[in-house]
Amino acid sequence: MTSNTPACEIGLIGLGTMGRNLALNIADHGFAVAVYNRTADKTREFMAEVVGKPIAAAYDLGEFSRRLKKPRAVLLLVAAGPPVDAMITELQPYLEPGDLIIDAGNSHFRDTDRRGQELAAASLLYMGLGVSGGEAGARFGPSLMPGGPPAGYQRVEPILRAVAAKVRGEPCVAYLGTGSAGHYVKMVHNGIEYGLMQLIAETYDLLKNGLGLENADLHQVYTRWHQAELASYLVEITAQIMKIRDAQTGGWLLDVIVDRAGEKGTGIWTSQEALALRVPIPTIDAAVSQRALSGLREERSAASAVLPGPPARPADQPENFIAKVKNALLAGMFITFAQGLALLRRASRHYGYQVDLAQVARIWRGGCIIRAAILDDIRTAYGRDPELANLLLAPNLRPGLLAIHPDLRTVVAAAVLAGIPVPGLAASLSYFDAYRRAWLPANLIQAQRDYFGAHTYERLDASGRFHTDWQKLASQDQ
Ligand code: NDP
Image (cartoon, rainbow, N blue to C red; front, side):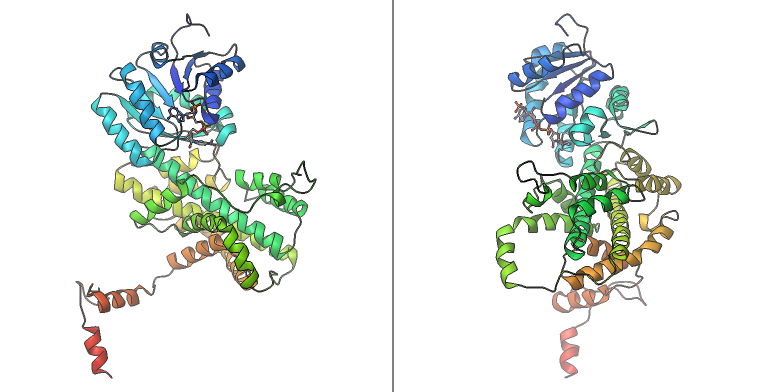
């Protein structure tokens, strides 16, 4: 595009991995897009690759602003945190009341609320847009999780619907609510992603070290799983990872990768937020902790020499055990979604987002990292009962879970006896067992708290709060 080209429908700042691909995706759908990047060389490089597409480069923010149709809409795809604030501060002088800024990075939802309020005071609209699907998603169809002022969403809805992934013709985008709803949903998405990845990693450990399967066998197993109820992006890529050879050694690439997982913090945010709202998400918490444990590589290595465990061999026929591990993973995945969506349900009420959980399940079915066949049933569950307290109770899902949960129990028990750590599967099972129990031993915790701290307790047979001088009664009894 030249400087004479008509004004662009949208502007995009940040030509990193996500920004470049999203700009191309937007342009391929016929929307003219103006791009700007802090480092001008990257813009020049990008423009050399996109000749003929409706993409206009700007090398300063004044030029960028002039290239946009009014009221302007600007997508930010810069690194999360202070760079977003810095970019907004730089951009603001070139904007006018009614213009819209959309932060499409992984911002913390509290930052999104703060920025939205600050910009509203300057009569600017601000939206938080969760984007999932990585590089390929951004290029060919991500799952998009927008939140913020409805007027802002309506303005960019045609573009977002066009660029989003499509599942049976439906775009994986829906307006999720006011304020930081979009970034909140994206945060929970990432928490669920942590949980699912941990569960799959545990099945890999069980099949590799418990059953002694080779990577080629594992490729077959995960491929088979992906062809049935476990169909999901993460199981699919796991199958593919198993068959990749290392160019240097000729062996399996996976086997030369260090067993220490990194993270950018969004899983921790989910756990922190769930703790703050008192919503149990133990599978996701376990996944976060297990990444931290993977980081203690030197300590683990030293400990392995002095803390022996049992031989890592679950006692079962291999094919039987593989079938049980498959069901255990399916149950664990389902329970992880139940936890994440329970958090979203509570948060939606707490923060007033009014998130429609059926829509969330719908837009997670395509484009994003946690896309999975079971989301169709999850969507149906919330579609039939938007007030569903917990997915475990959904009439369309409950029978299936009840049928497979014994395998989750068997697999966790086998793993425990074989000394194979399965914190994600075990946390999923305990969540299920605790949720389905009418009675939990929390009466003892009430009594203990009252004993040492006079925190009082409630009784089953009377209303109100009670206190007992436990120490006095105990000493009288001696
Ligand atoms: P990259 O690291 O590839 O690119 C970062 C971009 O941010 C670059 O354009 C960089 O500009 C710009 N930037 C960094 N600091 C500043 C600053 N202080 N002022 C102005 N611009 C700055 O990041 P990604 O494209 O991967 O990620 C962008 C956002 O999208 C992040 O919030 C990320 O968490 C999120 N995201 C990423 C996904 C992924 O798979 N990569 C998936 C979903 C969301 P410069 O070239 O000048 O350095």
